[in-house]
Amino acid sequence: MTDSLLPPNATALDRAVEAVAVRALQAIPQPHRSLWNADTCPLPLLPWLAWGMGVEGWRTDWPEAVKRAVVRNAIAIQRRRGTYRSVADAVAAFGGNIAIREWWQTTPRGVPHTFELVFTLTDQTGAGVSAAFVEDVIAEVARVKPLRSHFTAIQGLAAAPAVKAVAVGRPVIYARLALQVQ
Image 1 (cartoon, rainbow, N blue to C red):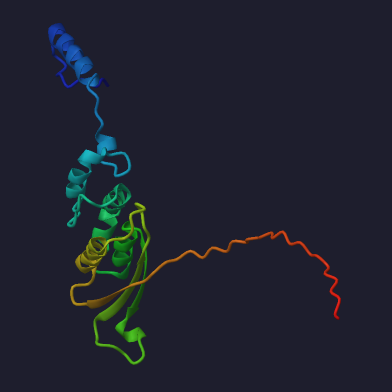
Image 2: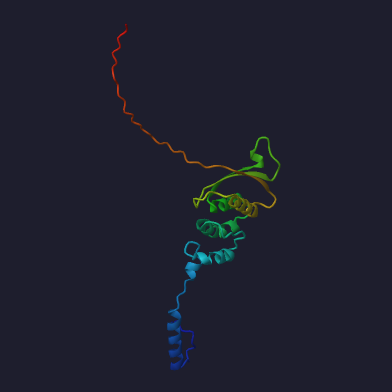
């Protein structure tokens, strides 16, 4: 079986035209696979890929790593929307960790269908985590959380301890003093 779209009774001229057209079309680069991949998509086209993947919140001032992670996680978040896992994936895309404590896990029990979200964000640009960035994370959590649930966001602080040993040398001159008391 051949890869021709022509009918069996096609003329030699038809087959020659098809061969020329196939060669011309094969010479055109087709970067479809790289355009539909969050890791290989060129940065100027990434907002269009995000739109195609159904990302609802998008900001141009996010770091490139966050943009790519949001697009990469878009389908998984949409599949699990309204679950604990979707909230965790949404915060993880922004470079953070979360701890969720639901109303039935608190002592005394809280108001039904509420939860506390404790999250820590790591700095991905070196410029620090801004208040607008934290608001974007909270807005994304509000989009993917269960609709009946309400939450309280608590931002944590992540610090890496560092212990450094410091040795100081001081030159000291000892001199014996001989004092005579009169």
